[in-house]
Length: 79
Image 1 (tube, rainbow, N blue to C red):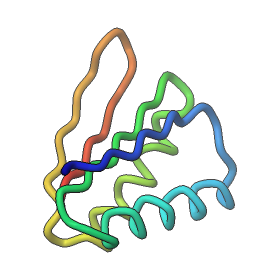
Image 2: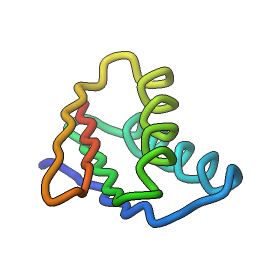
Image 3: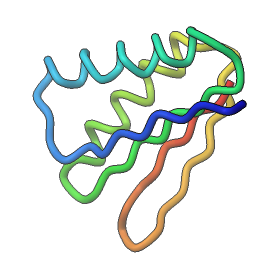
Image 4: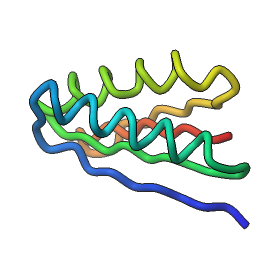
């Protein structure tokens, strides 16, 4: 069964980026067939990119898909 974690990024300071990154990494490492979806709009996009960079460094086997729909960026990671 696939498990999914969805996080909407509105705005965040560095502490929130660290906390969200850790939560995403822990979720992906804790089982197989897991998906994390980060959604961000406008000013929160750089923060979502920072979080996605941490996830890519920590989870080497993660598959990443990016999408842009109505000025909302989604970063999707799956293991």
